Image (cartoon, rainbow, N blue to C red; front, side):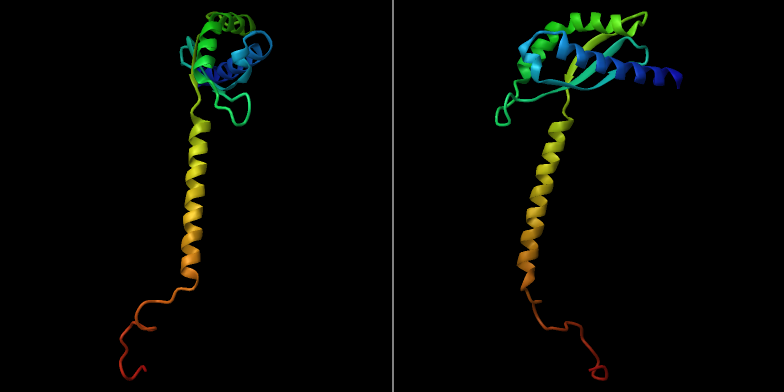
Amino acid sequence: MNERARAGRLAKRIAEIVATAIEHEIKDPQLEFVTVTDARLTADLRDATVFYTVRGRTLDEEPDHEAAAASLERAKGRLRSIVGRQTGVKFTPTLAFQADTVPDAARQMEDLLAKAREKDEEVRRTAEGAKPAGEENPYKLDEDEQ
């Protein structure tokens, strides 16, 4: 249990170091729009996966995922040496970068929920003035109960 806790703390620290290094030390214009979202570390503390997202230069512009991935790959060695220097661990973990799909999945879920709300509203408007088909009381009653 202690090893997992240590891996979690070190992964969080690696994410912070990589994010700060991208912002302040790595001079690559493609990395200007990269945000580090999370990091995961293997139990043996040898391999770290850093998750990131990329935003467009403007709200209307699509992000350039390929250019960001290529820039991160080029900066991998420098980032690893920065991580090693700032963590002080015996073996500096290798870094792998993976695009974070959580924001895209959340956006897709929001779109689906919006469509469901529209359909619910459409059904509510349709049912507003509707009357049941057939008799008002469809149940057969004995003559005594009428």
